[in-house]
Length: 186
Image (cartoon, rainbow, N blue to C red; front, side):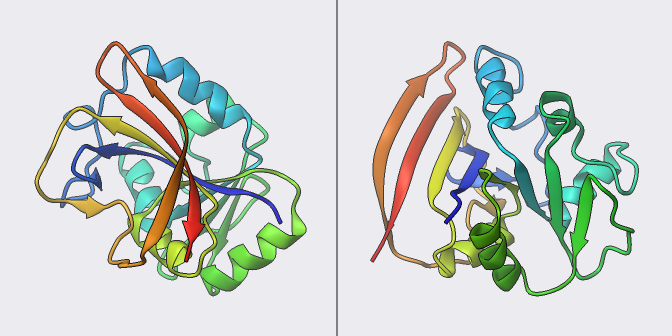
């Protein structure tokens, strides 16, 4: 079965965005020596998954409906995007498919039928649902040296108990720490 990797930026207190879904440079460090590693990692993925709210943030930042996430497109022009939303009414195209069906069933089937690394790049709610159904294999956290006290949790409302096996740890000059874990489900 294909590996699904949740590779995401987070605050030190476990939020992927503030309460208003803002995840800009007021919270996260986008400049620094970790950036080139992140772009190199994106090249390793064949598929990107994201929740509808994450996609909507791109639209608010000037992305056109149906466009792939610009940074991902820059780093890996071949990356296929799947956006999970029942409310977005945007036509799918060769780069971005909008999925309105059950995300769990879709991802389970995707993991069994593709031979490419799958990158879950955003959506705490989607991540929590996939975690609850034991579909995430690896967790890569780009932990930023900031705490915001409230916001969008890394795994939404999930209360799933898991064990993490540390695979790799890297510290950058700007204070960002990259943690890579294998998820062990009980």
